[in-house]
Amino acid sequence: MANNDSIQKTLIVAVSLCVVCSVLVSGAAVALKDMQVANKLDDRNRNILAAAGLLEEGTPIAEQFSRIETRLVDLDTGEFVEGMDPESFDQRKSAKNPSTSLVLSSEQDVAKVRRRSNYALVYLVREQGELEKVVLPLHGYGLWSTMYGFVALQSDLNTVAGLGFYEHGETPGLGGEIDNPRWKASWPGKKIYQDQAVALELIKGSVDKTRAGSEYQVDGLAGATLTSRGVTNMVHFWMGQQGFGPFLEKLKAGDA
Image (cartoon, rainbow, N blue to C red; front, top):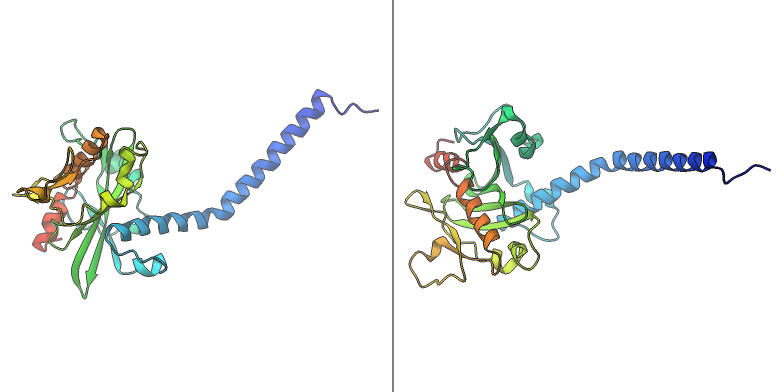
């Protein structure tokens, strides 16, 4: 009578099971790839719409996003990039490629991004041909993680229309409060620039709206000083000359 408990048969069964499972997982990954890509795109577009205050629950995301124009910008020149497909551009991959990115000095790198892609996506909202809002991607380091989000500006390119984060690893209840709708609701109406310099910042405690300059201040996150500082640094970097500053200047002048 054959010994079914032999080491050889045990190994054969284990290896066979691993092979079958691997084939099933690989097949599922391939079969679901298109769906995963579509879901990822929908999630990105949802966050852009939310930051711009245009998200309508119950309406297909693709239908809502059709009013938004996606363009690729050269961050050094501030000009639109022609000949590259914005839909296939991956800013994170571009930032890792030495041929398409810039290594930042410690003085430049206030947001701690290390390498900055030479190009970035921007999202334009127009009404009857007139620019209504611009949505810009932001990222920067907080306490534990790199925070990724979007900021939307009104047509004056200085007033915040909205802000939202879609990926981070900050502490729940502390730095994680960047997801709190009440905190995000304090951003619309705030001003980015004062005398052509980035002035917007998170402060310790709550903003006194009766004081001069309150339009350049946002409530800090209680118990999350480093996350608050990270958000401020992120805004200063991406709204400055190493970020979207040149693009916004050209867009405001009508040269973009």
